[in-house]
Length: 384
Ligand code: NAD
Ligand code: MG
Image (tube, rainbow, N blue to C red; front, side, top):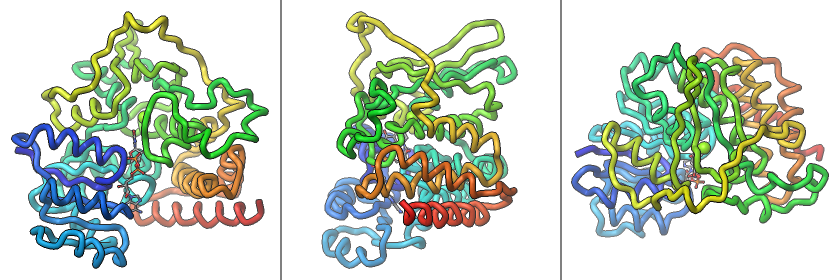
């Protein structure tokens, strides 16, 4: 029996994770879970999965959650302390890091320090603190399993191979809802258009990141750290059908890819049950129903955010954390209707231009850089 702590149980990844757990009550149990604002759903999850600890992001929500959980044997907590308690719960052998944004960094790092294996959905952890986090993983001797579908695909495609034989990692990208929108029409797209992803159903922030292709940029940085790969060896191919989830090319010219119907339950289940595989209910792939699988290079002029992510990882040090922070602020402003779609990239670029990258030695220093990036991006936002 594997005991899990789920950080961000009410989100898109959190809900899919709980579906898998519910299907395998003999394999998995929930030790702790945390959520943000959706208290009604959270209370239903607590009732169904009986965690020992349940924590909400805001202390103000604790009384309401206690009310909703009346009669259930659970310790209700809140705020940063509750998040840490859930991330480090004694019984948990593995922590599913499924909070969105840099807010996921501190609890995920706490889980590593407490010796927990990590199923990592929160890519922002590696984007902001990559080298520090990977050193922590090695230092505390814990295992790190990717949940992001591309990274799960790479993880599956490198099994049994020597890392020195890898010549290239090819991350695939759907291209999002604006793949075929001419660049000059991007000015007029709405929040609704941007949230309308063709292949994947995900949380709002990552859905906007997919539309700008910042998501792929974050994934390049994630892959750089996860697989200790030079950035020059990580390519992005647009693959609108989202069937090949990523590929690894070897020095002998062989390419190994992982395919499947796009459904996050598959990579989540693999991270949870590794090295075993369990049935997930994901629709079997029938390649004969596709008229073709296509691939091409991304238009870097149109998807400016992808280029910014390459620039950030090439600058290194604090730049990816600052870029990520500016992206979170800009996406939030776009979702709130404060700025247009193309201004997301503009705000990120200005914030990066204003930043002089410097060395980061600890998670606390990453959080300072993150904070700097947020404040600077807010300044540019005010000026819009
Ligand atoms: P989501 O917005 O659907 O869910 C986020 C969860 O985190 C919710 O439970 C929310 O309550 C909680 N949360 C948000 N802010 C918080 C805060 N400040 N403190 C504590 N809890 C907070 O997001 P998602 O789509 O499930 O994505 C989660 C992470 O997984 C992201 O980093 C995303 O990039 C990554 N990811 C998601 C998908 C996907 O298909 N959704 C795929 C690959 C990677
Ligand atoms: Mg992905």
